[in-house]
Length: 253
Image: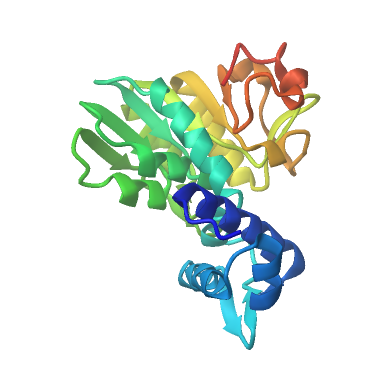
């Protein structure tokens, strides 16, 4: 069956990205049969992956460009990240000060922040800053600091010190993992340090995380549940996968 809607295109590409990451390659004819679309549609999907820098062409298909780059992770679970971003829009008030971290999930959120009035944004994420720069209704500030290439972000004492100049109402962050027993986690200590500084400077902490990270543990602990005010996921509010977290977080969206 040929699927033409934008939503189904995004969902198909999301599924293809997960398969590409797992198997390392995709062939045109195999993909056409598995996802029920014309080979020309698959070739357009593959061209999209090449343009995004997450794959390269080979005879009959594509192979994954391996690595933990921001650009690669930005397109993993893309449909879930977009669903999370849309949920968080209601948490941004006019004439407020908000902070965005440098995660891929929050960069998607930054891209969706439109039609706002008088909102001040502070971020250490270079993609988030680029998405918001010059946008009507938003005044955006980029922290200083040392560049962390893996997350396309600025970290360190200068980045953390910049937060002290703002009265941050809500901080929007994501993490690498969230386990009901140990809390949230990151894979670099620089991210842990910055995010903890951000939480300490903010009136409300919103944690955005897709379902694939629930019940997992990263290398370093970043937040306890007592520090998280709102948990936002791509799941429905009654999904049983959220049950372990209902008594740990004040609000789940």
